[in-house]
Amino acid sequence: MWGGAEEKDALAAIEKSLDLGITTIDTAPVYGFGRSEEIVGKALKSVPRDSYQLLTKCGMNWETEEGEYFFDTNDESGRPIRMHKYAGKNRVIKECEDSLHRLRTDYIDLFQLHWPDATTPISETMEAFEKLREQGKIRAAGVCNYSAPQMKEALQSIELASNQVRYSMVSREIEEDVVPTAKDAGMSILPYSPMERGFLTGKFHPASRFNAGDTRAGSRWMESENMHKLQKLIEKLQEIANSKGATIAQIVLAWTMGRPQVATVLVGARNPDQIQENAGALSLQLSEADLNDIERTIQQLALV
Ligand SMILES: NC(=O)c1ccc[n+]([C@@H]2O[C@H](COP(=O)([O-])OP(=O)(O)OC[C@H]3O[C@@H](n4cnc5c(N)ncnc54)[C@H](OP(=O)(O)O)[C@@H]3O)[C@@H](O)[C@H]2O)c1
Figure 1 (cartoon, helix red, strand yellow):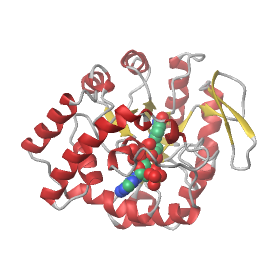
Figure 2 (cartoon, rainbow, N blue to C red; figure 1 turned 45 degrees about the vertical axis):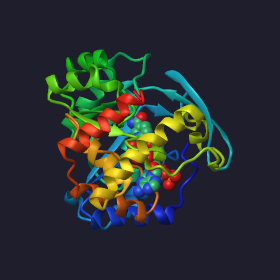
Figure 3 (cartoon, rainbow, N blue to C red; figure 1 turned 90 degrees about the horizontal axis):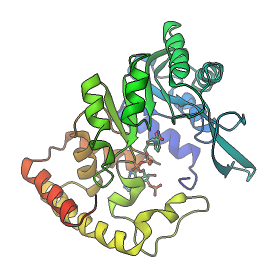
Figure 4 (cartoon, rainbow, N blue to C red; figure 1 turned 135 degrees about the horizontal axis):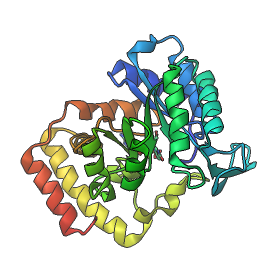
């Protein structure tokens, strides 16, 4: 969905991350249908296990017709694949074993349900998570893409560490009730797509072309009115970046890291250069005036 990736770049990106003090790596079985986890396992095989945290997921299946139909896609060789959201107890336990094997480890730091599965009671999925935790195969349990009511229901069965959700300067839906629910429960928010899959770096324009299979081609940000508004925000971010000797990506990431309940920001980086730039956000401080400036621009443009 991101237009493919080169294994050697991915390995080099992970190595660079560790060099720069980034210790949290998020992956999932469904990313490359096992391939992403295998690459992460390969990259980290000689690194001391207690120097990084592995986050992976379960419940997005391409091997079973059980559960809720999600979407159709293709694997690397073009073979059609049908995705289902399914998180029955036995399936979750099997997926955990498969992930441990691909990641070449004996425990996962944070095991997350990838998407809600409307066909399985939440308590059943959480029972599997609890069992895995008791067995020491996972250190903590989390969810992704859960609404506030789903979080509350799951919390009746298990202590959840986090909810991984889409969140950026211009995708703010979670602020209404997911973030307050996380706060009440002492849970973390792990934002994904903080750079709107690259659109918030300012590098895309109306004539941008994408690789086959890259779903960014159909993004709402490719629609001319939206892109025009986004461009205005990018200009403001560039102004702030210039005043700090920073880049737009760094401003965007620093903003995201500073939001309530955010524990770590999940940034997609395809190569060491992107890691190098993005890691620069760790030492960047946005002032109250910068934050107000950004907020005013977003509101004026009606971007949320
Ligand atoms: N739980 C879920 O349902 C879910 C869903 C989506 C993502 N996630 C997680 O969140 C992670 C991040 O998501 P994402 O990839 O959508 O988010 P993102 O960080 O908003 O976008 C990543 C994209 O931005 C571009 N990029 C990164 N650094 C850049 C830089 N310094 N300069 C220019 N472009 C840069 C790259 O685009 P190019 O490809 O053009 O180089 C990269 O593919 C994923 O890897 C995954 O772990 C989870």
